[in-house]
Every structure is written in C-alpha cells, then in structure tokens.
Image (cartoon, rainbow, N blue to C red):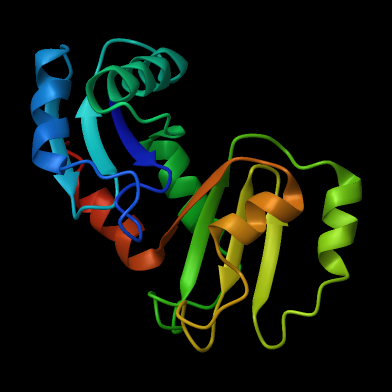
Length: 176
C-alpha cells in the first residue's frame, strides 16, 4: 500500500529539526519502500505492507529513537487525500497557497466547535468536516490568526495542515 505521510511541526521556526534526507535513509533501512520526501516540512510518500495505524506507530517510534523527537504522524491513503481535496469547500480559483486542509487526529467535541464559531476571524474563513478542517486566508499565512497551533488549542486536537499547492504536489509523487 502506498501512503502519504504528513509530520506535524517539523522544521518550523528552527524547532523539531529533521533533515529529510536523513529521515528518508532511516525509513528505507526500516523496511519502507519507494520513499520520497517533498520539501523540508515533513511530507513523505512511501510504500508498506502494514496498515496505516501500524505505519504511523512505526514512523513515530523511528523519529523518537533516531532524532529524539515526539512528532505526531498523519498517514493517509491516496483515496483519503483525494477525498479531502475533492471535499474542499473553497473555489478552485482562489490562490492555492492561501487555502489549507488540516488533518485532525480526532473529531473535536461539539463544545469546542461551538466556542470556535464565536471567534472573530475577520475575513478568514473555515469549514469543519469530521476530522478535516479547511480554511482560507485571503491575506496569506504570515499575519493569520488561523494556524495549526491555534486550531489545536481551540479544538483540543492534534493536527497538521498543508496548503493546496503541497497537497497537489504530494499527489504527483504517488506512483501508479
């Protein structure tokens, strides 16, 4: 099975530093096949005979052992990645680097979602669907209120997000 892996908060602001070339080498030595990485922010495509839960456990354990970092690992199949992209509520003509899909480890509790609705986000827009959180930042990420840490704190979940450019690039790395 081929998987798309998103690591949470790797190589961001000088924290959780992992060289993707080193990680790729360690993943291959651990038995993963056809390992590819994209940019330095924890985006990986690989193959494994294990199910997604086991792959997540193996990668999390490998990163802890080899790099000393406790990183959340999100493992998606091509179908899951495509479904998240197809369900995106924002028009395709919006700048793809201003539209984000955030993957949540759990469905947020309703009280947290209700509290989130009460937050003034200005012109920033979002839509929550199960374990997916979509958002659009008309002015870009630099001055945004909506970011991964904010979403995690308010919804009380672990999460990692990617803009549509990255999602599309990951789909091109998948071998048929």
